[in-house]
Length: 180
Length: 92
Image (tube, rainbow over all chains, first blue to last red; front, side, top):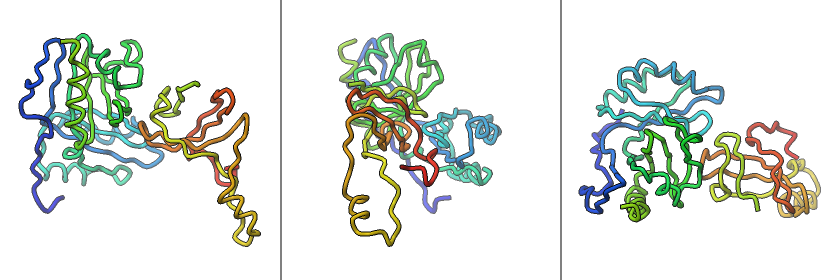
């Protein structure tokens, strides 16, 4: 547990409508948590899901694999640092949990043209029948490393390192501008 | 040039997501090997026309080191494996 209290401040602009868009919605997710889980080299997703089944049932969220033996556990609950320490301490030694809530931030892009917007920066196939709802990939938007998760029919969640948040926020508004 | 690389972890990805380190070098010479063997190992790199094995880092994705078997004329990629799957002693 940390010795001092962290005060999380969203890096996204406070006034979300400053760059007003009609057809495309761009929304910052200001609450929630992001945990990084690191497993041993024989750990698979099913094992991790089983291991954290109890806290996941309690806190919600989902597992997103970013690399072999590495996952993000992302949820919308607001957690105290004591609770995070509790969850971390309850994990078996094969898994290491790091709180990344302060380091990685999320935003949601949605709208009928969302694929055309993201295609300007992301180089992966976002087609409806290739990239299913719930699927997530670690990739790049322009030169910014980002995890893209499909959360709905025409809705994607993007998670980036906090220091890139403002730049990405600006970029996505630019990318979406022609559809509004 | 084929710009898609099939990462064993991430699937088809564009070349832009990768950093290329260069050829998979021959095994390290013995510590008492002659100076020219060490010079060869440390400084001299092959630049073959045809099949080549290279280390690629998937910096924009899973951040794993991969070993690509790539044809330098056609850019056809015949195999991509995670570097950790290479056993010690077979990294030639």
